[in-house]
Length: 355
Image (spheres, rainbow, N blue to C red):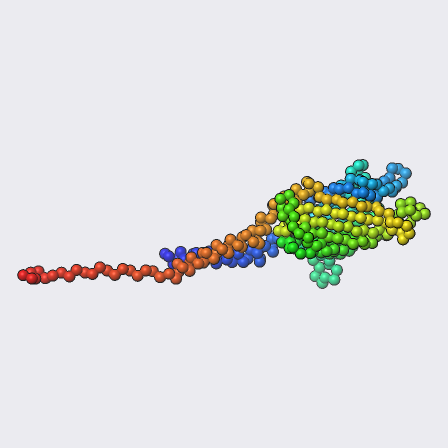
């Protein structure tokens, strides 16, 4: 009976130790990936000391520089299930991001853009299909559409006008198990991956986060035809170069890779080569309280599961399995105690002896 019990404990111990090995090495990599289905909205609010607005009150478009404007930027992320890459068990997802910035005072749309990204569900890295002999995503899944004029406020353009380009670096979130190191994060304004440097830890709404700061240097991002009056030049229309620089700060929960909080400081100005630059945007926007609370809810819903698969589960399975194996070995190798010797038989004397 003891031997049978020992064998059962040994089998359970081996099973637990195997689970401790498989959870972080096999199960976790399979399950730690963003869901295909996505439909979420985030809101950033802030103030711009200067911002360019284009309005049309019936007499044609009018450009003006507004000062100390309160702004709201709304970003919506949706999964695009029309793409062939979006199928069960795929390691890649195709999401659409639409962003619109409005002046709170009168609801004027100051800018709008839309881009579609194919990215790795495990690492959050944008995928570049060019030059890949076995493409994971088709060419059409990595285009960027940008608003060129006020007539395209929703960011939509005919397919032939889609401005395709790669979107390298992290998109939408940081990887699962974010480390205290620098990462390359995609910047939509420059169309490049820019280093986000780890600067320390900080608590946001009770959650410990890693803080990353991305400094985008002064970069020419476009050439625009603008009214001469806007840049202090003669002529109804002149060509001006649009330059951009900024600082993006991200507070990331490391287990899930969710950006719990985000802040964007941006500066844009038009340069003609003569005269002083014309600032067309200078302001700071950050997640509002509701958006931060939504991100915290995401963390609370997923962090425990991921920690169980990657750390706490393997730890307890390993400890429990080791204890079971030790007990089983003890029961199997321990010898049974020797049976006590039988009591000596009393010698019977012959009848009549000693008489």
